[in-house]
Length: 520
Image (tube, rainbow, N blue to C red):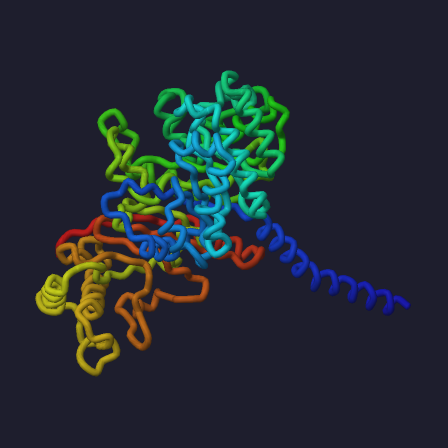
């Protein structure tokens, strides 16, 4: 009898152990699949050398960017986005609010021309009606809610209202007395319109769009708001901001700004509307009055922002809700007027080369890249054949690169063109020089990339190193140039074991360098 009990107990324990990991992983997968947070980018078009729509979309796909926001409803971009799985917010420019708010027919025409004509091939997720209308265009405020309601009615008529949300991006200044967050409230002079907007968002399950910039909070409160808090840097408990009314601890300014919005909504008895951060970022360059607009601070802010969102830690008030964010912005808009910072919010220059190096190891697939720390040097697109040939000759001659593999009949001879041969020679020289940044320039003809250029039986020098282990977990995406290299890496965890968790943490503590290229 005792043996029977023991056998039953052993079987029961074995059954529990064998089933537990499966059920646990299923639960986690469900949690991850549900409301997975994302980071998107804003695409401004005040760029002198903006990519064509087709090249722009190819670039977005290369960077693993899955969510974008446009400041209009550019037909070329929307058409190019078709069947790409990239989700897009389209916008109604402020100068169109009067016409749309005054006429249901005009609103219906706008939806038909700019939304229904592209959906569902192009995955339009929302319509942003105007931009910071309440604080920047007071003459249009009376037309804001009529425009929103008319556009929503047009979506209902097209049976798209469940797939596409409508809201309006607001400046942080609609919230007064934002810290401590528990004391925050909406500007009372705007409370009537804000109440209508929140009631609409609640009724239609749309988000409240907010443009939140810790950069401006810091600049306006230097000496009060520490820089480390603004940049998401790790803090000792003594440096955390504490709300004296709730005793909630804030380790960064953005969370405090988001919670100030939630408390303001609560003051108007609205508790079921989620905040969507439609703009946030940090400029990489400024004038003498903006000494904190630097590459280092921009890199730190955006890198830590990305990791913070994908950590899914929410805010102190709502740890269960992680706000999705859109970084301002994808490209430096060099056509913007002063101050200098206005033209320097981008992650990339208009020609798609990186402004600075992000460090987002362990942050999933957004702007994710090779976890092997491997870089390559290849020929840049758009360089004329004569220039490439001269650089190729130098690399294989005075540069003493190993060019044997690009000789006739060898593994990297095909395709037989100057660009392919130059890329191999450039990489050979770059690897020989120990991947030093200055060894990948060739008078502007080359660029550093983390995408393995090997193809078919042709293995590039950078992939012949024993330390380079290419696996299915590596997502290659980021291209960069001699103007400044961007290394963005991400690691996909596949389990909850101590071992896999340790790998995840290890991948999150990477060492980073800025790369600047000079002529060899």
